[in-house]
Length: 243
Image (cartoon, rainbow, N blue to C red; front, side, top):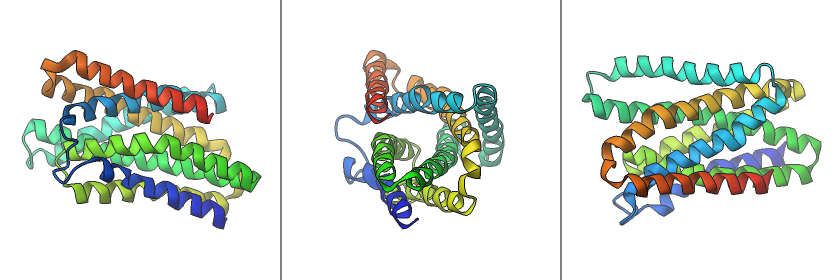
């Protein structure tokens, strides 16, 4: 259990990776407009090359339902977030900030699922656990950088973006602890977590980030489209390697 918790802590600390890629102003000098499209590509890559295949492999029958529940659940959540925050921001700012909040919630679910996977791997053997930790870490690095950029784009300060990103990443540790408490009984239900996480990221990319790209970077469409493709390709390569 100690090794699994140590691996989970290392993965949680990766949420701070984005801090080192952004300057004091919270921007990547000269390339700020590419952060959001790369984030879209990363999230779409994680959905279609990682979360959806894992969900359907575990449960071909119920997996699609879990993905749909994740998508529609966050569609419903977005309604309540928009309603709650309507008096705080104008319509455009509220949309951006609410997208970041939904992203943090979905990331927490995704990280919890990673914790279940990590604990299960260490139950098999320390060797399998170590390589599983490495595989998850390789997936997390580009995702955490992308999420950090989205939080900054949403108006969070660099310090607050790092704090909230790290806070959501701690659910990896919670996933490890609960898996050890309930032993292998959680493994059969892992598809629910990966499916919900897939639906969440798909909803965020399709309804929050892509509309923001069209709104803010309409004059640089082909450049942002290329950046999105690069994000997708990066995740596709990492997924094929780590799997």
